[in-house]
Each structure stands twice: as C-alpha cells, then as structure tokens.
Amino acid sequence: MFYNRPLLEALDKAGLLITLVGFADDINILVYRPTTSYNCQNLQASYNICLEWAHKYSMQFALEKYTLTYFAKSCKFDINAPITLGETVVSPKLSVKVLGVILDSKLKWKDYKQAVKQKLATQMLALQRTTAST
Image 1 (cartoon, one colour):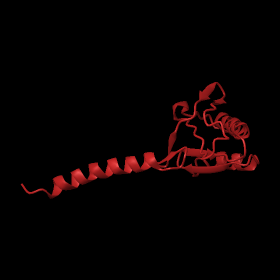
Image 2 (spheres, helix red, strand yellow):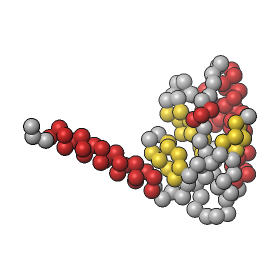
Image 3 (spheres, helix red, strand yellow):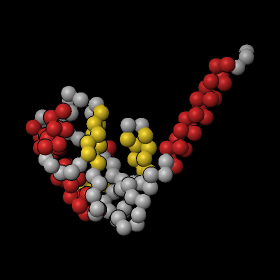
Image 4 (cartoon, one colour):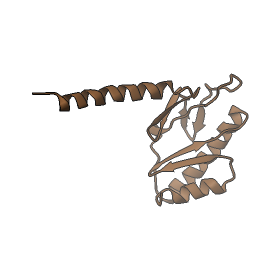
C-alpha cells in the first residue's frame, strides 16, 4: 500500500465519486451512478489522474490488464459501451476477476461458482492421490 498510496490519495482528493480497491500493485476503480456515460466520464477522469501519477513517478501501466465490466441488473444501462482511455479502447467483458474473485455483470456468481467447482475437483483428485494405498 505504500507503493500505491500517493495514487490512491490523488484519486480520493479528486472528488470524482469513485470507490477505490487497492491491493499491492493492483487498483480497481468502481463507479456507480445513474448513467453509463457518467460512469465512463468518471473513469476517464480517474485515468487522467493515474497518468499524471505515472508520469511523476516514471511508472507505466500494463494496458493488457485493463478490464471493464458493468454490474447492472436492469436493461436501462448500455452494458456494451466501450471506454477510451488515452489511445486504448477497453471493451466490456461479461466477467472480471478482482482479487481472485470472479464477478459477472449480472452478479449471479455463475462464473465464480464454476471456477470453485473446477478447483475443488482438482484439489479432490490431489487429495485422493496422497491418501491412496500403494
């Protein structure tokens, strides 16, 4: 958190109505407001602050790690709208992984349940191998 602290503080002071989730060198920016366009504007403004921080500290972001999803149960949001961050266009995905938890856009937990079941099957097989008689 010492590493990200100045960036988290800069984003917090900007007054953009965002929620930050930071862990080690990962930061997730959550925006939840009434319209998709408003959310995208806040994300773009947040990205600009991130770029200023990166320039100040001679840092670079891993563009291939950028992910976007919309958590919406109603159809009034445009959950297919991409966002342009600098020269990078990020298209939304149906699910994202945040700190090891898979979140789907409908918040039904289907992808996460499937991943847990798959991991459980692998772990059960490993456990059976260690307890099998030889």
